[in-house]
Amino acid sequence: MCYYPFGMLVPNRHGSSNTYRYGFQGQEKDDELKGEGNSLNYTFRMHDPRVGRFFARDPLEKSFAWNSPYAFCENSPIWGVELEGLELGTYLDKIKKAVEAIKSKSSEYVEKKKDAAVRKTSEVVDALATKSIVEFAKKIYPDVDKATEKIKQQQFKTNPNNSVAILLYEFATGTGKDTRVFNLGKNDNAFANTFLEGRVAKEVATKFLEKAGEMSYSQFKSEGMRYGLEFSPDHAGFLESAEKHIDSNLPQFFVGGANVLITASDKPNKVNVTISNPTSRSSLLLHIGDNYPRSEEKNYEKPLSTIQQQFTFEMEVDVKLQSLFKVVEPKK
Image 1: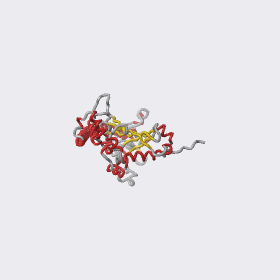
Image 2: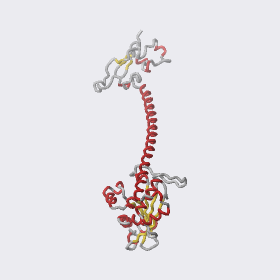
Image 3: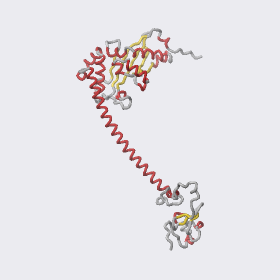
Image 4: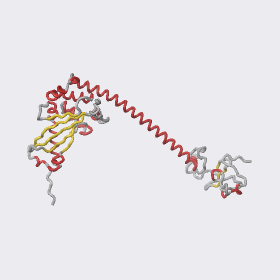
């Protein structure tokens, strides 16, 4: 009796064709058997299930000589012995699911490790930044850590450099007020006046005139005008940023970039100007870190948490205010 490693002959199989129509792998259909059932007839060649071999070479061999004779089973005859490649799909699906499961678990693992690394890195960076800023603030104003609110207010009025040290210290340690408003014109304020002098006042006025020509006076009265004072290279461009850094005093360097809001005033030919600046962790780290908001409700002092400075003043124009704005033709 012959040994059929890839299937075996079923005696008198034709007699029970209604109950057993197919043999090995569903290929030995009765009308496809040759001789005693020792071969399977495929489209281009025949196969002997006793030895698991074809009777002829693959007709595509000349065109695809680099392919394995097991190409039909993706070079895996144990997993994909099905000659038409149908069985391999089941295994490929299992492998695909296994790979997806591994990727999913790996992704979760990587995310956990990444989050842990980010937290650890943030802790190290925050500690170094806090230490460096506090040391720098103390070099400017050695007693900054001992200053009461009354002393701080006095320094804001008289000493612009010590004012910068106070704000740096409050930012680094998470202490002090989260928003400080500096009114020019109502009180002597050396810090605010020093910040506004020179290039800042000129830039505020120049941009106001530019923006006024782009909007109507009625629009200005109802919405106000907003624009930015760029300072860092990623916003102002390298050359402009470098020029501003060179031309800045210490308060201007501390504030850096800021946002301007200009609104109409009740006084003729005057406008109200508010310059706002957030001192934040993101701006400190060149926009590569997250910010820490302050939480007064929890009385939580978070180092490097965001603080705000606002500078408010009136700006006078030399001509009639309405003449600066775009003229809107009445609809016909």
